Image (cartoon, rainbow, N blue to C red; front, side, top):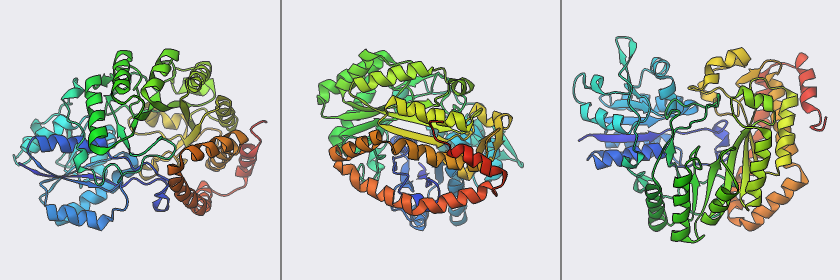
Length: 499
């Protein structure tokens, strides 16, 4: 049997000084599923989670060296793949015989480029990792054994060799529950995202894979377009464990398509009603075009407290460029129905999208205000590896393909007709406009009066935000370039949203 160290590398919000603003230090469920699978197969497993705070880097590295693993596996998205590579390099320097492995969305989307840029990795797992990982462990000591494992990218003679693709897992119920027993101080050791939970302790779950939609900004490299679900019985079994063994009182379902399978959704909701009778609350993602009064009423009875909708833009033409397949009329109707059902609504938007102008960005802000959302979140569009727009970005604007800064808050993509300085200015003005309205001041005050347990986290984030924001804005403006022609763009960005 092998000794396995699984590492969750750190994930930065903007830079090292903004750790509290990334309030969502949720456990990496994919890695903990791998830990459960490896444990079930008889392997010795060490979990090292660097996303949880505090977690000194050198202390974590020393823990792995003392463990002396045969394999050190890391999962990464684009913005933190360089952190994974740094960790792999430092492990290799101290344990030369240790196999370093990378999994996750970034390696799946760009396996060849990733291995060329980070040769410290011995292997990259492409796609779903559960079966691939176990087969890899069985062949780790066999010369040439990796070549027999599907779903890998391997360095060979200065090039990158891809083994045959791995078939996706049809029955998700055959996969183990996440190894919650390996999570440090779970669930209190992790921080649920501010404004996204009703009560504590809170836990996160993902109960499906894939998405049938074809939004051009979305990376589908790992799970593909065919959606697969855990059964309702499997989901309710996980929930029962979380409630009974860990005292969880709120769930956050991160599935993109939690509401897509009506029969499954009904069984899950009926089970939550029968088992907990309103004592357990939850948040989930919704999808415009899939919601109606009956579904929302059922969700409310089952304990649904908040639904997040990916709304993206308040301009129909931009939605069509994104292939979003939703209309502004449907958005308004389904958000209104959600509010009428007594469920909070969080709206997720992007700005500086392909085809965007300052005028359409302000149109999005006005549209969001019309929706009377409980939460408004807007990020700067970034073409992510694995998405159609990653390869099409240059046709729509200029794109700084900097993996380290792909966190949706740096203006790496600038659409034709806009400037980076304009985007930076607009970002702050849009947030000030939305949250500076009397409606939002009242909603936030009421929220903290009814959820006082979230005040310490809000104060911590607010202090960090106001002490670090000026420095970040100065650096962003400096990077955006000198004034001159930019000044005219700033004046356009600064125009009133009522213009």
